[in-house]
Amino acid sequence: MTNTLKRNDFPRRWMAPLLALAGGLVLGLTALPQAPRAQEATAPAESTGEAPFSTGEQNAIESLVRQYLLDHPEIVVEALQLYEQQQKAREAERLSAAIAEEAEALTADPTAPVIGNPEGDITLVEFFDYRCPYCKRMTETLAALIEEDPQVRVVMKEFPILSQESVQAARAALAAERQGKYNAFHFALMAGGGGFTEDEILAVADSVGLDTEKLQSDMQDPEIEAALRRNHALAEKIGITGTPAFVIGKTLVPGAISLEELRSKLAEARAKAS
Image (cartoon, rainbow, N blue to C red; front, side, top):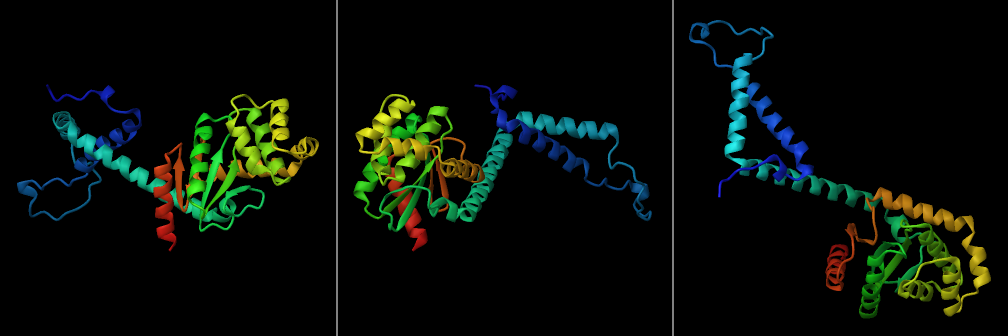
């Protein structure tokens, strides 16, 4: 098989760094000083302000660079892979710093419900939406984690981003916290397969023993709306764009993960904290 590399073979996210790389190679070469001609070897050096290469020489260099990259495309791929790794490392450092800066808002907001052990030795923060199917899947995983690890503390960040029904469910859950029944209401909502109209939410609330009249009243409290706005602002600061998303220690973990992965990341966070 011939070793040819076409433009369409590159991921789109690589095109900008590829052009920068090629341009940098050309600029680097054209910035090299010319060797002095024999008759000028003894002449004193002086700046003429002229380009180091003539137009013809520069075109020849650009042609050589282009041909070299076409003949050795693996060099371009290696450079782009390194560039991508460096970008990911920088982004990870930025997110870690943002998480450290927002530690109190993440773990100690008094309006954020806590499940598991409130006095646990490790805190896991979850951003979720009640209409998110992956969040529903993670509910069983979290329940299993809490059952097997009595020292885990889970801070629940209501992050309704999928629909107005998501917002209603989030408001109802925060209102249920005021009656001391967040845990039961949360798991009942997640277990349901339907939508979250007001009637459906009230039916779930009634099934877990909530005072539905008080719930409806509390759902309209501006403090609950303010709590949801804070969660959205916090998510933006630390780079969360979807659900579910977890913060464990100083690490952001986007997406649904397995129980084994959760155990592993909690162990890492505990080791770093000790």
